[in-house]
Amino acid sequence: MSDSLLKRPALLRWGALGLLALACAGAVLAGHESRRAAQVALLALPVLLWLPWPIERLAWRRVRWVAAFVVISAFLVDGAVRAFLQSQYQAAPDSSLVLAAAANTTPRESLEYLTSQAPAMAAAVAALLGMLALTGVAITLATRVTRDAALSRGARIALLVLLAVCALAHLSKPWRRHHPLLFWPAWTQQVADLRANWADQQVQREQLMRNAGDASPETATGAPATVVLVLGESVNRDNMSLYGYARPTTPELIALRDEESARLLTLRHAWSTQATTVASLSGLFSFGERDEDDPAGRTQHLIALAKRAGYKVWWVSNHDDVAVDQQHARLADVVEMINRQPGRSSGSLDEDLLDEVEQALSDPAPRKLVVVHLLGAHPHYRLRMPPGEHPFDDDDGDAVDTAMARDGRAAWVREFRQDYDSAIHYHDRIVAQTLRLTRSHLPAGGRGAWMFLSDHGQEVGHSLDHAGHSPGTASGYRIPALLWRSGSGFDASTASRPFRADWAGWTLAELMQLRWSGMNDERNVLHPAYAWEAPALPVKGVVFER
Image (cartoon, rainbow, N blue to C red; front, side, top):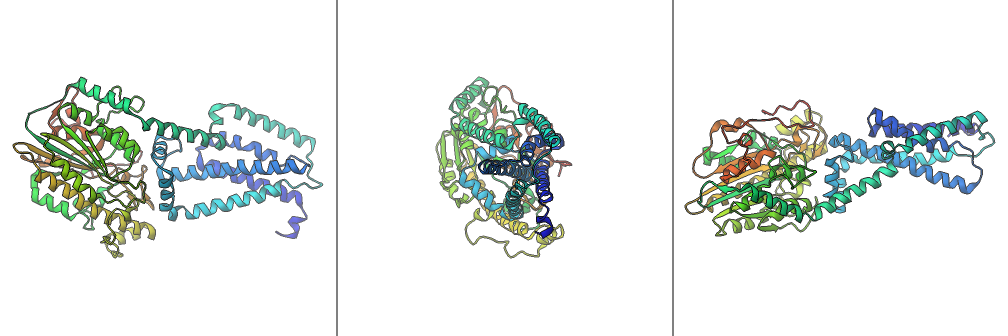
């Protein structure tokens, strides 16, 4: 700091105050759109107006320093968090997407998520910490007591008028709730309430069973049937060689496709309508009709219908997920959750599910529905396959890596792509084995069917420097979808029909030969009456026929 500045304390004090004002304005603009930003700025203004007011008593100056630092820091952190959520997920903190993710995440998972995002966040966090340190220094300079610190009578009146305007902003509840010191405690309570609602959904499950009974579901024939639904996790079809990807990530599914010919159908244009697991599975099992405000009262659940029609249902999972467990798995007759290490750092491998799948398929029940929920390619990608199975680690400079480098993708994102592709390669083996097990356990005199799809996709450097869930890009929704059934094959033209995961229940119902009052054949991709309706995704320019 130069001697000239030290000799001009008023300039130094007002310069520090201006710096604080600019920091608050930047944080507000980063986290809110223009109209809301103006409202929130009025909430931040009182503490700035308080700083130049002369206070001589040391104790009160210390109180003001602490209060000002806490409030200004709250606005800075709030703006940083909102900006991050908007840039990465195109979502506000109180959106259903973020609330559901937070409610379904343990503190350990949160730490693991932050660790996984460290390369992308490191510079931003360092800048934020530096800004917080600078804030402390600027408050000290802005509140220095000197002989010229006294305000004129006009200045004091102006400050009082501005404080009165700010008071009106604080009296308005729609404005006041966006103050960081009020918003985040309320947000925490929202998360807690949502988690509590998930913790005990027995009443809703009982209502879903009653709904299913009222619909009088039945099977088209009394013949034995075995149907397997395999749910992948975070699998983007753009990374599957089965769908034309340059790296050989799905050799076993390709071999099965060639072996099964018309009996294995690959839907080329499959989409999820949600970018997160909980929302996606909710849509799938409720046939795309689940009302979030009345989750059981007027809707059907595929598992409840299957049980009412005489199917014995298994839920075999490699997840440790309270929401999925309560909303879906507990409707099944048999629930097997093999993952005892929740969180992104779980090393539980999907291959450990295969014994449970085979045991379910060997059960003597005449009609069986086996739901297999894989951990798939969920971050952390490198933990989704056994140690040493990383076939693409040395593929620097191959066609995929070259294309990513040409598109300006960062080195760390290209490394994540190698890990992700290795996870898809391992996943291919597990998914293929579930189909082989289904074929080998067909009921005598009966039929078998198998369906595989992912809950949502992943963005791993496809359209931006990001690795993970991505509700703001098409990669967050692009999924694989495969169907197989014994006996007759599928019409080849069906493969080119666009398909949406929240309608998958209608197609699975056909594979199970289920019928009930309220059937909607226009949403069954296998039915001649199928009528595609494009979902409203928060992504611009999506072409669903690709």
